[in-house]
Structures are given as structure tokens and as C-alpha cells.
Length: 283
Image 1 (tube, one colour):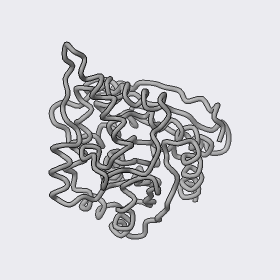
Image 2: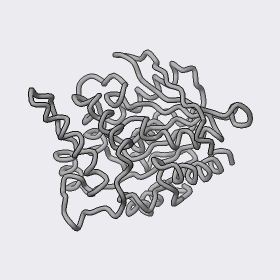
Image 3: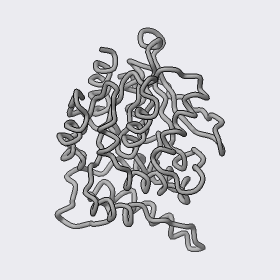
């Protein structure tokens, strides 16, 4: 991977505002293949996917959107559900003039990518579902209530301290809101600059960051997976708590390819994952 691969940024005009994206791609072989649309985890933005964007851009053109209401993308009105986020993704794809595409989503983005593939399967060359949590009904309820609290700025600036600990604790515990020894994650914290960037992305969208999280918490993932009709790869990595769902995820999409990959948010992990994903998408 070339760490100097330029990642450019842009906005597209969509219903109700603008959608922000990051873009990179090869100049030779791969530029003529269907591009890869990347949908990030909540509560951050496409910035969290920068290592993967650079790595994957060696093989294919990559467009990584900020989900509506996250990062620099304007929110959807009301209380949007996953189908609304998927439709908004297609609107941005259409505005960019893209035809057939590949879709990749991780965590919350995995739900959006799956629904998007079901909305327009005729336009999807390949689907990659990375780290999807297949919760029980009780876990869905708990996750909906606790995972993405609504936070407002106040005169003391307490939202700044909250955001730092909220983002930091996602690396320490799973789920972050239940900080017990049993839920301790066995991974290191990211570099302070990476954590700072994560916090800033959440603060940008403080009033709306929770919308995509809440939508994913109640989305019927199993029903959506059963409808998938496009060529699909499912993946996770050993650092991620959702690795425990990978085998079940694999069974819900008949004919899917199962892979254990690197962490998409780290340089080494992104390079490893990109190589495996490119082999699948270009087969």
C-alpha cells in the first residue's frame, strides 16, 4: 500500500442538503471496474476508514460516504430507518453518475449496505458485509436505549468531556456502556491523534450522530440477509467483538464467502483486508 495515495474529498447535493464523501482510486488497471462504495461504522465518519480507502484504492476506485447525520453529511428528516439511509446512499451514487457498483459496509454501515443491495440488486456487482451484529430481541432493546444517548451542548461544555470518554470507551469495553471486567476488550487504545479525530467527528454531528446507530439497533438484519441475491462476502476480524457473529452471518447468506480479515481502521489490517476483498470483487 502507498501511504501517500491521495484521498480527495467532495460533496454531492442531495434531498435535504449535502452528502460528504472521500474518494481515491488507481490511475491504471482497476479504474474501469465498478467502484467500491464504503459505508463506515457509527458514530464516526468516513475519516475512520481512511487507511482502508488508501489500501483499497490500489485495486479499485473507492467512494466512502459520511452517513447522513454523521461527519459532514446533513441529516435525514424525522426518525430515519435503515431503508432511508440506503435510499440516501443510492441518491448520492446517482448524483455522482455512477452505474453498477460494489458495496461494502462495516458495523452500522453493514446494515445500510445490505439494505442498499436489496433495494437495487441489479446495480450491485458485489457486496461485502463486515462486522454485523445479529442481536437477540432483548439486546436490540438494550442497545437502542443505551448505545447512542442524545447529548446537547451546555454552558459548561460538558459535551466535550462526554465525547472523549464515549469514543475512548468504545475501544475499552463492548458494549461501551457496560464497563465491567467481563466486557473488557483486549486491544490497545489508538494513537491520541486518531482518538482525537474520532471525537471531533462525533462532535460535528452531536445532535444527529445517534440516528444511524438507533436505526441499526432495531433493523431486522436476519430478514434483510435472507433477501440478499447478489454475490456476497462476509467478514470480521479477531480484534472485533462482532467476530462471534461471523459464522451465523455466513449461514444467513447462502453461497457467501467467509473471510477473517484485518482491522479496516489500521494500516496493516486495511492492507490485508483490501487484498482479500479485491480478489473477491475482481474474480
